[in-house]
Length: 163
Image (tube, rainbow, N blue to C red; front, side, top):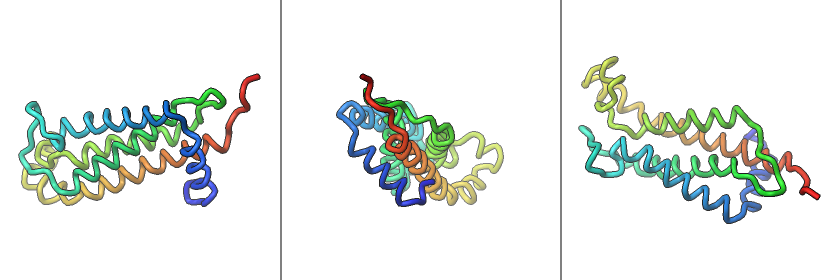
């Protein structure tokens, strides 16, 4: 669905038709995502959580892009008075999976208890850490696909304004 130029055009039209309320939700959703992912992974420095391995340079852009896309996906649930929310459960699932993957992508490789149990500390650094940038790309891709699907449905299936 997202590979067609038509769906890209519809998504762009949907973004262009958004009002201030939807853009405020994008900002609030992006901020909330940045906090919910960045604070526990200690990409955002804080006194509660720490990291055994320093933050990598790519963690910052991955967190920013993830937060923005998550804000856009969240904002597709905000209805304008003249339209219904798009019913795309698959797009919703893609966004949720993308958000969870971003947490694992930017997190400290040896702070993840599951990875430590399965691979040990040296395995986490040798095998898990090199996979994290790929997880970040996959996460961003899933969030982008979710946003594109939900945005293109906003323009594809609008309801007429109430009389």
